[in-house]
Image (cartoon, rainbow, N blue to C red; front, side, top):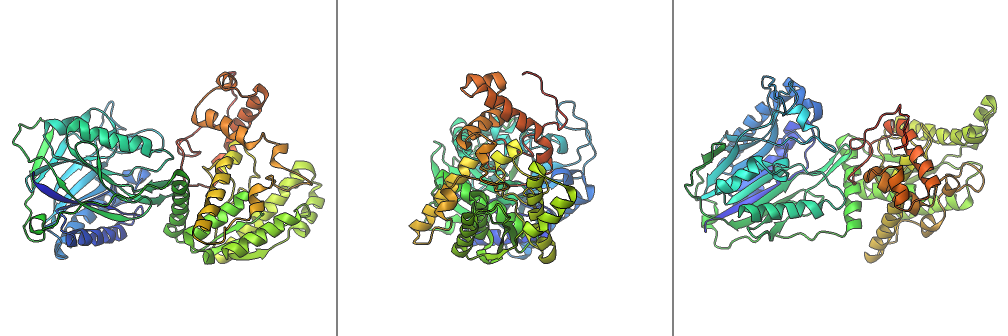
Length: 582
């Protein structure tokens, strides 16, 4: 069987940074060429970043992408890399708007494509067929679908090329791979991370390999883009579905591997298959290599480590890609702010994290001491700004009491954080978790202020799990556990009134999180929730809180998505809503 040396480059692009992303591509191609690669593939939209959302409707942006991909081909040739076959994903256009009765919006002017670069020019292009329109995706609205399957013939091997969703959907190009007798199926992707997604994604890759009797090479981008996080985890499987190479999660990486593929045949191609022959020189190729390269197989961390790494990368990339150098957050001594603080320190370094303790007359001694302890353990910048003297005159002038007085304390804290942010240029982190966000257990314009919410998609019980995991991780490395044990073990409280705990207002968090999981992710109605064993009164109260807190969630900061149904892109419900009995 002929051999082909593949390089899968999982890069971390920034949306719109065409020049910066191009430089990253050129650097990866140079490394691939030095390793003797015949073909190097980048992820979906690696040139432009992903998702581009309504930039796909901007002719000037599309024209810039088209110009840049042509320039990239020339730059590769000028750098002595023109003989390598390079597959790069990008948006293409603008095209004349085309009306498809069942395919996409009539005003779409762009396509989601993969261009094949070699010898200073674009040698071929493939347009994505299946345009997802679910969860975080809205490609159905902004792209024109493709029609044909592209097959590249190089070194006596036929390599079929498809893009992301084309692998997931039966029918279309994936059904043509076997009839085209392709030896390798190359899939470029921008597949966001979710908990347990590998339980679906990897089996899909292996199934397609077996179904089509072909090697599958799957390359994914990596990094945070707004609230999405791409995990890399690129993989190559053989015809039996066995992993032969795998890149690590959550980091840029160049995965190089030799594959022995079925020799190209002269089978009659279906009408919708286009084949392009590409010549490769012998110099620097596999034919000169005496030792075949067996790809590395990265170890996949356990679930909690994966989640931690995802959240750290999502936060760090949001900070870096948006031009911030530091973050600031309130430190209450509680579990949520503690986890956010160490997460920020892991993401951008403790020297770039600023914590503020803002005690009121109701703050307990242990809250202050726990915050002090956390700051010392992590080594972040730390200051105290007491709020009692700021709260008192407003409370007196407005004659506030009860919940209004409690919320005033939270809002004064928000003012302090935003003031320091404006003065120095920090990004404010809001520390609320998904459970609180679901039921509206926060003060709008108070503890909810901030530009990024690291725990937005993290339920309360998972916050505790992550805190214990992070401390154990530190202990295994011989380091001081960063989160004080008292912050983990004490009852959670907003401390806005004497002896307050969260459970004055909410069920125990294990019950609450289970109910929210079934209502938000499972989509169960009231009767079904009761049938699943939840107390009817609790169901009515919590469902009511969730439904009536949509207006708060619409104004909340974004945060990294790690679940199947995150607030924001995934779950969009009306604010003005009067529920029926269903």
